[in-house]
Image (cartoon, rainbow, N blue to C red; front, side, top):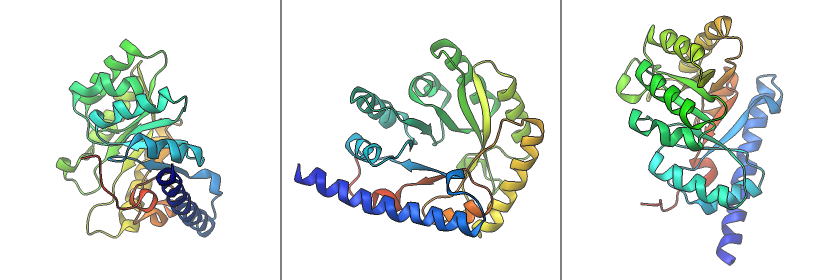
Length: 237
């Protein structure tokens, strides 16, 4: 119990700091604080941390490995807690049905084949469409995940025309070694193009612990925060 209270206090202090950073970034960008959602990246951290964060008011959590996330989501659901689960990692097509069972948003769709697999999975097990973000490669290196070039528009059109998926916007990670402002400016321009053809695709997931301010400056609606929120501690493995 004492350990739980200590961890809760640690998370509460970190969460307050992150929220203050988001608030300052929004003020500097002349945006309302409510226009940016914090997605707590809980990968490698236990379900107990997720439950503590939920008790502190966190509503959105992100995971990047199905083998961890599926069990964790089940434990949280069994505790009677409802959260919005974001799958943010590179996704293999054979995991599509598993992810579609618990995720509310898949942020890492970057190919026609993955979109088709998720569409089939969502239609087979869900009562409503699965929200999807198209992951954009900002450095042109597909090995790190993300649609490259015109594939972005082909994949987004395929998702928008599917029955089991709902196109909600874009996601990207700033390339290593590049100024985040430069990278996120490119992402913002792509988001502007996307919304012309798909007015409902207004979500923009960008920015992590080290660059959330730049992401907010360039229109991020969701920032994915792990280290600044959960700290450096022993992982599940």
